[in-house]
Image (cartoon, rainbow, N blue to C red):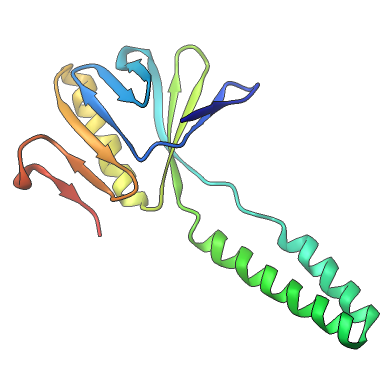
Length: 153
């Protein structure tokens, strides 16, 4: 399902999309590839809440005692969780449309997103092509059976 905000950016929470000729389908939405002005890869924003966790840790040190140590331990766990999240955040396949809208499809594998872009460009050039993309599994199914599937692991 897609959620739009005021700056015309749409984060698409879809596990993938299907392409048939010059039409891209995802959920209840359709995009004509003639309306695409740019396809790129952009980074997922980092979580900067670790700064607040450091402030909480300092407060825990200042309070001292059992409560302060508990606050400090909580802040350390928070910092570790944010670091793990930032290391595994992935990238966006960014599709900018002629209307000014931008769609973002999330994937953890940059190499896979490069393959998706290359396939999209070839299909846009030819006006032909039928394939489906699964971002969560990092698989492109070209409809040619097992030998036509592209998988990144």
